[in-house]
Image (cartoon, rainbow, N blue to C red):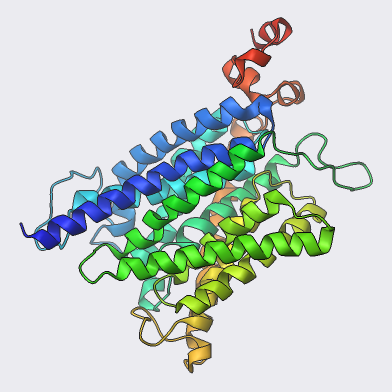
Length: 421
């Protein structure tokens, strides 16, 4: 067992830890961006559903993505993963399994942004199982597991499509079927802002996600020998920084106020966008990608609100729109010396070929994730006699209605206790 094998294995294991810790960032982001009466529920369901996703990934998810004897659609071996190390690999395959498991958990958490503040706990349970088995692994196999998009040279280094767009399309299906939260829209269609209860939580959540993203992107190099992970980390950071700045500036210019939630979403949009291209583009291009993502997320949020799509955590804009832009950006900016997958981008004389492959990957992956998620949720709506809690339960909050306790106990009154019981 040589030093390179050990260093690579440690690096991948560290990446897995950082990506799993991103769940903590999502807890703070999602709880802070919603109302106090749902904070405990949001925190708890995140841990619960990550546990479910882990079990499903161990049983079938990993095999569907990376299993051999499969086909263009899914793999067909390595179910109930044993953890036995494979000979000839340059790193621990068990560490690689944990790294990939962490990604599956993030995709599911992104999807649940579209469920926030109104879905039954039973919906989270069942959808976790089906999404983790039928949706995420299929798209991941197409692009990362040797499936048909990989054969076409689809560029998605760390998952703008595989993780972020897939999760966002599931969230989109949920927002359509669940419909807007009570009080979000007036009878004339005008929007009532439903502010999150803690911007400090939201900001800290974004910072944790920003740090975790170095495991997400730089960890995807799967090795340390050539030091390339440092370049990937640099591109990741610069795109996030550019996204935060451009989103703040555009909100300030358009609205007359520098909006903090917009700035935080801009940072995340920059991170999502660079996830596909972080290993394929030069640093100046990473800055451009982040700048455009920050502006795009501002206008995207406004657009979906006008369309009466109630997306409490802005999964469609931050992970969907930015994920699409990030995936397409490699078809523009992929540098010849960095394009280890596929072809150089349009701006480097590569023509429209790679951009076409990227667009095809976005269209097919997004359509599949949306269609399967919609069918699954529609079936659940019939079987469970609704996806949504009752009006009374939504008004008192999911902390009480689903769990019988409050995320902030000091605000828990005797009247609340009677309702919960």
